[in-house]
Length: 192
Image (cartoon, rainbow, N blue to C red; front, side, top):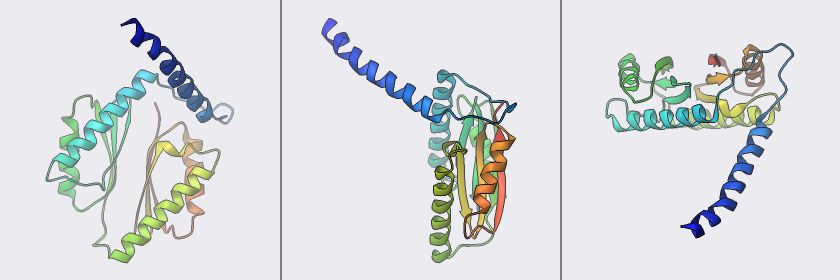
């Protein structure tokens, strides 16, 4: 038993150092006076578990089975985003998510799809989403990993939890500058 724990110490030390380095890299200066909501590592892990449970439940249910629904979790509150086929699918997804263990509430940021997309439109949507994600990643003032991006026929839906209103404004400004964006649907929420 002692041999296992001795071998585990260096692994845990490296893992902890890597985690701290990632956290330090993510830290950015916020505008003066801008409130920043914080969470503990435990809450972050709990939210990741809830997100995984929700995604699994949505994929397992034949009525909502869809990769079109984006899931973001913050302190047990689940935000559902994306473009879906019908109001019935939205209602079913919300009902299903409310029953998932660890879910404290559900925010609906889903939108109805506007007609059927052609193969070309689907490819264009994928390219537009990639351009937007690249632009957000390239901007040092945007925490892009907190933002879900979905495109449909030039309309872009942004969802997720961000630190403050200035962050939302910055994201929208970056997205407006991406070629091919015709409309922006902001479903981002300020962290509480």
